[in-house]
Length: 253
Image 1 (tube, rainbow, N blue to C red):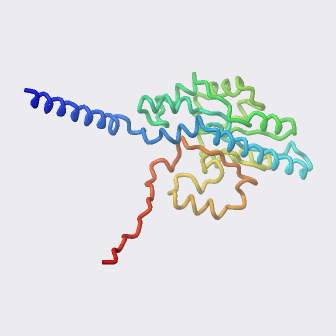
Image 2 (cartoon, rainbow, N blue to C red):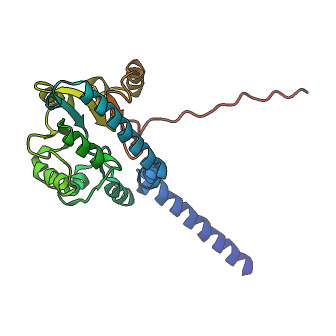
Image 3 (cartoon, rainbow, N blue to C red):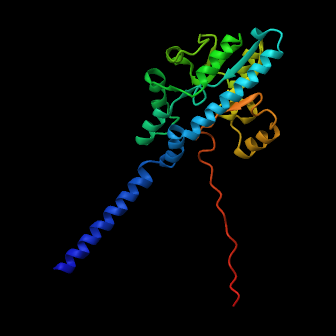
């Protein structure tokens, strides 16, 4: 009887282990984003990188203004999400509920009712640009039909130059919205966390092509193009990892 109980207990234990593994492996298809999101939301390193980006942006802005005859003709164009505002609370909620970060059924309510935080250094930099008389344009792929909510969020966060005209949301591709700005301003700086915030060549292109363009434009990073780290989501998120393959050891005998 004792042996049967042991076997039964072992079988139940193994079954429970298999079920637990199955739940972990199949119920939440976004579980692999946990480490990246933890870095994005909680690490001191991400804060340092964000402050570093805005410090560089401030230095380059000051030089551009000093060299310009009329600072009112200058413009900076910045993305919003993960560049100026931090949406990691939404991503953490979606991860816990096994939702993809880009699902509109979770993102749209966040645009309406969410409470994003400011990226460290963002407000100080934008206020500095405003005081220098530089035009600010916010170009984001948030939903244009919900523009009033995004305007309200940005105003609540105390960001400068927030208006119907200054905030250009999803409709035409970002390259076309940037062209609207450059029609009457000289864009001296682009800020963003995804590469299509900088150039149309990055939009809907394979990662190999994106890396090639990054290398070709090496002189613009940290000068005209200020990129912010985003380990929470991006076109890279489903790329395969490359592991080290050690050479087989040949025994001397």
